[in-house]
Image (tube, rainbow, N blue to C red; front, top):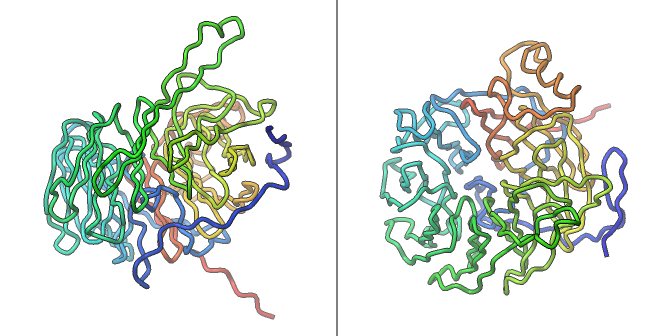
Length: 465
């Protein structure tokens, strides 16, 4: 039976159950661990529980304009040595140019310290214990030694690779590195040598769809197939195909056939569940998010919604974020951020933002009881996990002294007034990457035009008599 929800400034369910906090895999040493991969950990939870709480809006960010541009798959990663590494598509998208590659930036000085050129547009970067891994538009996986910053090995796939390279254990260089391409070729590599350990041919292509726990890898494809594989040998533990029933007028129901779920986003492993977000041909009355049993692949729930409040749920191409007992995600073509129960899939709250953005490809990240919501209009919101209330938000890193008087903001002001959605910010200053968080509370995020913004943590002010 579905719970009813009510609407005020936000929408919430009262009296919902709370489970024990879910934390990411702990570091293997006492030293502060980095933000090594998009969504932070191999389970793709998007959460880091040991980052200080940002109580008030951070100051205007420090910025660095890279020689190349960024896209949503160019998420920054941060090493324990204080390097911010990020791939770039260069100046020409889908074509080779000298600025294609990985930029590693000194966090203290915000200057480029290392650059490794790739054959074409660089996509995802991942930090392993002793290597930096990057994929590119030329179907190449490159391993860069972190000590010498030289290329250790490369591997060329039969098809495009946009999935983030995935170490099974982020703190163990002997664990396999999983990488898959758009033709469904999944390969486990030796991280140090690049030698394939095992391979698996999947049905459908992998866009972002990889997640892993220490012993089980989850792969999700564009044809709706979801696989659980043994990480040691690559044996398939279970496989399922996800379909959905397109919603049609009553007169057309007899002609409706199930359609495969088109999965672009990486799965999220949450305790005994695998959370899958997918895309559909048309909007429907419930969000395209569901949960599978990690042991069997059995469907546990499909997300619900209160259709009297909102019934036009779009595609979910970006990975949702696990925040304790709930899953939080940004709704496309809207002003909404939503949360559903991890246990049941029921809607917990809807939170509205001032701007309507047509495409939202970056994911929310979470730390210390706050979620950071990047928006393509260039605003960064802090959001509480209980009701989605925003204690603060920041303006984009504009060079103008009076930000609100720039054409950038007047354009969005008109959009607010007319209740229209903007596909892209007019000057390409909108946030497009998923953020990365440092162990001391700083926030790193990139814009479409290739600007890296560093929001430094603001310590709370002590009150004195």
